[in-house]
Length: 149
Length: 149
Length: 149
Length: 149
Image (cartoon, rainbow over all chains, first blue to last red; front, top):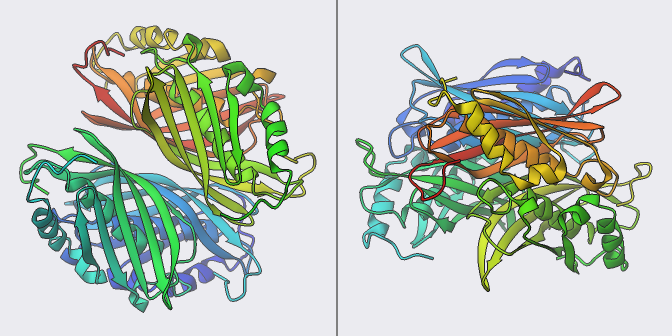
């Protein structure tokens, strides 16, 4: 894993996360910020459910996409912004749990493009189930007016 | 497009949608339910944003995943449930708008698996921008205890 | 669809295609080159098969990837090269046919990234079956030593 | 990893691989067959190239798709066939090497669907480069006339 280009990577990441209104709405927290690896989690509430009462795949996608995006962002130069180009997610098991945890990890870090692996788990009665896995392409945005995160 | 196996497809779809807690939380509405095609939309609120103040990709994914899932569901036999196996989404443009619209359309409808195309647009000052496109695999669940949608 | 930046797009595309050794090995031909849309086809031979005697998914991927790559390439400036960033393909039906046809079409053409839709069909006894669909991200390479296609 | 349902998994896998005509055409060999993990490799020849003289992404896809398909197949019951439902591949680096190696590994093994991770490397002058990564969905085919691999 390359070292972060910006020693301030954690505070920049936390500041950007705090500007994502959706994270507050769904109750997600930014649990770990390491170079090239970020973890976000979320407690279950009926307001986050699909029709069977489990976490909706879109909610899992929301925290997985941000986990990957910020994993890439930790390695970006200061002043660069991050953009998701595309992502794919396999839903491996019903997201039936009291809590969901998403981890994004950088697989390849390039000047323009970054590729991350995305994974998510649900916890129920102390047992973790791997409920989603996938991959994501990010783009580093440099010199776009007003885009710094 | 195959005809719906179940003449009741619209009311079954609407009933299932109303059980997705996340749709109420984000304010999404089920605008159109046709055989093999479903449309869901959503007004912008700061609570749905990513760090630049646009719709978060996860929110777009949430309505796109449900649009595709229900597009497939309209063609399922009564008593069958639907499960997203995987999906991929390209974020084609910043989701900067007052409203987001997601459309799911069945490309291939099989006994066990269904493939859908997912698309999303944002509207701003009367202009539509195609902000996301992708594809999705769904599974028909038959005879799973308690899973009927 | 944006107009080609380079009036010479067809001859540049055909010249590049002729340098892809794999196309000759599998017997693929570049049938149509239009701005933002390219078609490649292939006759069946047992040497192209998977274990059931149909076209191998990798062979379909090979012509679909090149069709999409060259669809993007038709819109690139002269001297720019093309690189596949990622692609996803759904295998919708057994690729059982005498001929396979792949079409790549540009969905979004950007300065750095291009997104294409990929589709493939097989023909058997005069009937076409849609056997694959998917999407692809391409990158425009400018100013890389020796990369001009 | 679940144990193979069929003690004969290696010979069944090797027999099926030998029926894939494309593997002989491109010169691929089935190097390792373990429960839930398969490795396929390939020497470079100009006939396998894209326009810059590297392995074509479609060739990498061909061995990656078969590696994943057979990784899943090792865990299938006897008499069951395997089908690729979809796959996605990121091209992480130019596939510039004397040899390419693809590995498929089962992430989740279900009754109907299996999810694999796909990876590929190129070797050049003794150095390995990770040139592709992705994921794949497979389907277990049971009781389809004539489909036993």
